[in-house]
Length: 347
Image (tube, rainbow, N blue to C red):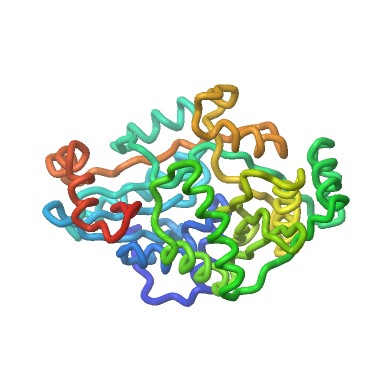
């Protein structure tokens, strides 16, 4: 069964097809995220292979050719499901003279899964999305049962924040909300020295997801001052913590925990059954304080101890010589040529 493209699906139609994929879908495969990637000069294309819907993004790399990228996709449950889809991707990419296809399937990392991907001819590479390891929190079917599902420490933190006067709101889709989000996010960028895209890109991406109905900003206030926020997303039964920030010097404890609690409540109300806290150290490094994600990993594992490791990113290489040059110097050179602002990358 050859890969086929779907012309101009509606957002609702496409998101429903992604939510119906074997692993329940991923927000990075949604129609809205396709529009976000368009802001980074990618062209979203909508395809189906062996009944699995996937959003692949195409971009021209000057001097190399076209690259396809499937962020957090294809949405399959295991390596056995991926094999036939890889075959379809290979045939379609060859027809369109694609240099390589980057995939990021959320398949649990095991020696058997890694070996299966290698036998498909895929090449392991660095992930684009920083969530190859994560914490998945099982959501109850009712918001009334959510707090009871928390470990006692997190329940106490949520209650303490409420007791100390923290107010959490589902923030509206307006300029004030995005200015407050950016104000805290900018502090995180500065403190951690992150090389990321600028304000216009992030605010536009947040607004795009919110207006598409797949995201909700949740902001915590103390004495009328924003002190923490999270952007929660939901597609089908899978919700995720897309982005968030808080004051470095926190005036009260438990605000970030309360924000996550309210984000999870929103997700449960939308029918989600799992909440992806998105991004921790690998399970073999959770106790390593030198890992750059150690502190955030500690926070997320306070909700649920188990870390889930995905197989990460794998490239399907169609033009080996060009790909070899791309790996050595090409990505850096093309990235510089296409850079519009500090933090802008090819991906």
